[in-house]
Length: 420
Image (cartoon, rainbow, N blue to C red; front, side, top):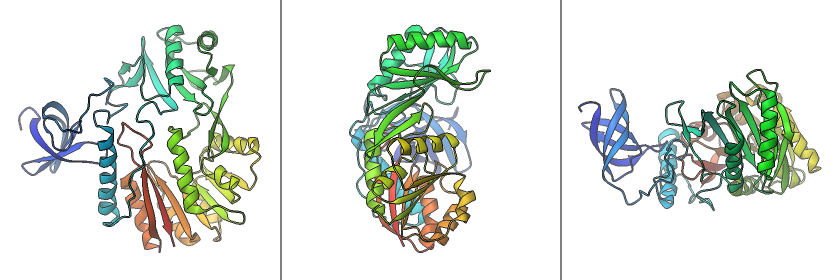
């Protein structure tokens, strides 16, 4: 190895999407490389047993490689992989992580559910501004790569971005968060003021922007830089529909970014828990009620626990809008309040953040002993870690269903149904 560069034959793919090969016993992770390829790699990290680097030259290409659509790889890191191969790799990574971290070598992994659209599916985006550039950060830097059009987004969001470019001046903005209603075809936005963006200027900008883009229904300002935040032009919330429920959401509330696949998620959760009148269900890390509200519509009595006040507000507002009864939102950290509940729930849905469940939550679930648990995971490694305590507590795997919520990225969503 000279000048921190080496030639590598790539044999497999790791969680996170890096190609993996070995040189003189050293495991090398190569960003941008695919199994079956021979590449040249520039290393940026070297440890006794492994190294990490980025592909700088391709000697032999995999048949799974396709031409990227974007110059920026951080936003769509798997855009160089044919979509069928993306699905194949995700299934493979899920099986490997379950075997490695949970000791499950015969996991009942169903074929992954592909996305109806491999591009143009995202209903929200958070972009950064730098001078006259508007886009995303380059990998590992704070430098913004200008992106006149983003093929990952719903068309209505690209329409809003084009309008913003036509009215904003350099220095006015630090960035913008956009959210689209996939069901109703309009958008709202939250501006992050730049050093030269005072509130009066932002109000003029918002009005001019909405005049250019009729599908932009409202503009808000995020808190910070001396601004109190709040609406400055038009609507302050947006409506979207999932699982037969109309959700009313703030501009920055977390909501599933892929509406078509989120519908499938709701179907899988409902199939796993079989909601019906008389059933008591618990929704942990419930967010805005993406699962809790459709479960309640089906007749179950649902207790939804969520830490963030804005998400609880959106959930309660959506429940009232749809006249949904039998759902109660509790604002609290799951690991701090689960002690207060007694056994008797017929099922639990778990949709934790990327870091997974706090160990206390898994202990308390063993105590509550619901007959069925549906766990929605966005990280196979964390899923493997969390399944261990549940399996030791007497649960068994009924199904493992991967679903591709995030095409062009290595993110893997899995819906796991466990029975006691």
